[in-house]
Length: 403
Image: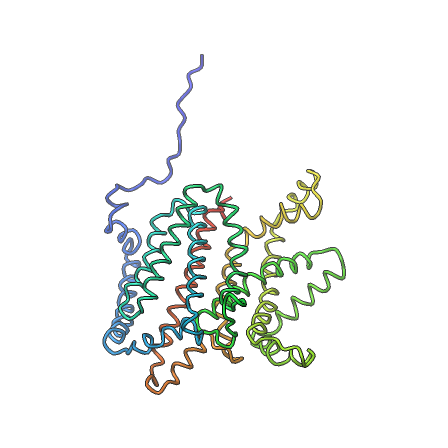
């Protein structure tokens, strides 16, 4: 018998001792002070941060008058929505918490520490001394419903997938019915009373939910072999992408009534939503088209070899891979859309930015621009970072860029 030498495995880079890998000093040495130029760069950065952060914190804790935010907090959140109907907004938030908790339990069952950290945020809001007892109780209930949804998902993950899909699909219609009202169960609240963060989120959600399927259809239409469908898709995409969003909003608000009969009146919020959807669908189409073009031709040929028709090949084989490849781009567009909703203030809607202008016009709070705009910037950053974080988690779960 032949003597076989033991296989030599390449162990790769030799790891440093555990004390250098897992201690704070080891991390600092590896990432911030590993070389002399890293050390200089770190020290310069710390000095610049000290120069910038120190006066900012000094102003925030000793000079800023945050009473402008405390007094107008409800105005920032829901605008002029009737105070006796705010419970409908809380019901929508509790349903959202239940749905999000169920989704977290199904898709991220092991990320319990991160989920627990997120659950601390409503409790921190509940602990604020200046909010009402009604709001304090509802913030606690927010966590209760989130934990209830998460518990059901952990208990029966496979059985809860279909109810979760139903909840996701039904949430938006339920949200509109709760906010607007339905006779005779709920009082009708006209859209001219909608405002603040509530209106901003509604515009963003409507723009994302409706423009997404329209953008997919336009992307497929641009790659279609039918001349009329392809021409329409190309003209729509190129014309809409050639004008800014402000132009589209002005067209929806000012020009649309000129093309409709006098007896037909469309609500201003509906017009703004339509303008956002029209604009975002064109950009969504180009993003999806980029994902479609990245799919190798062999995927089509393999699907045809299995006997799949064109519809089955597109929606079961090609489109899922294309959307998976462009997740970062799509989320980036969602974040951009969320921030672009501030433009509706130009056409007279009191979104979060429009409410800020209203608050600053109050005589007792004139000159408090820094406090107000810093508070609004913090809100936009929190939501944008949340979407970015969810995108990264989804990319990791789907293995985007790994295989």
